[in-house]
Figure 1 (cartoon, rainbow, N blue to C red):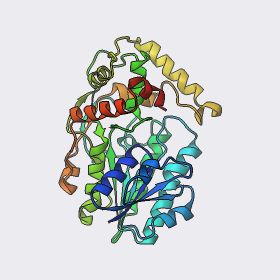
Figure 2 (figure 1 turned 180 degrees about the horizontal axis):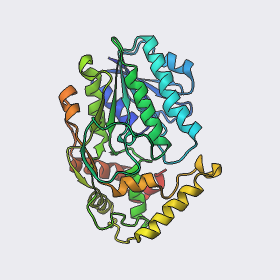
Figure 3 (figure 1 turned 180 degrees about the vertical axis):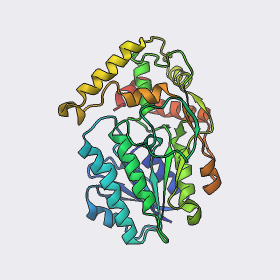
Length: 347
């Protein structure tokens, strides 16, 4: 097939490009002007094209002659203005959907997130499935705009233009310089991350990048009548004790698991203060807050996801175990020059 990958120079996008080429597809890689395309240019079967989700004309050119669109580009952050999130995540997706539909693209696979469904006031939840409805209020602009974008994608499904959304939880693996795991590892290795578990097990679903890619490729070739208009949770096979996993990852890189704990009232005050300060425009659009209710929820609430629907409808099976994934990650960190070089590279 001829496939278009948005966000092709990013973490998940680069893996999507590589695995699509291995599968024998011709890949058109959408990258923004000024992006580093050295890795893309070294791969046979990859056609870099320059464009932006804000530029409808560039998107119309990018989708010409394409069979499948993998839309992984997004603003993924815990800070920013409403305009920044809305223009990229919602309007960018709307423009790309319109361009793909008009060009006769057959399949549109959207990389969404379980954060589209996370609620402000819920506690631990286990084996969440796709019957869970969208919330009335969201934690932050990222959650809201991913939910709105996902609904746009699902509503665009029609005969001849099959759309679906995948919800990988906590994507991790090599080449990630700005996601949740490298940031937490960098803080642990520098001794800046306290143990926020409260002395309890926080059980979560995570998703190695190769497992997320396997789901994308499976959805691209699945029967249209099975997946059209649907959303699917995607995760690793393991139910993960988050703080034990983080501690194990830290030890792989010569660090130690965090032991320092912060009293709950002190932590709650710090989170509320940070959120108040980050409502100010100079901070909101430029820097990530050190703490937020959203980040605290991800680190302190148990949340596991049932991937049975993905298995049933397009044969999803995790292809990488967490132990194998951690070895991959360790090898990649060493190839970069070791843990200290890795820490300096984290955005």
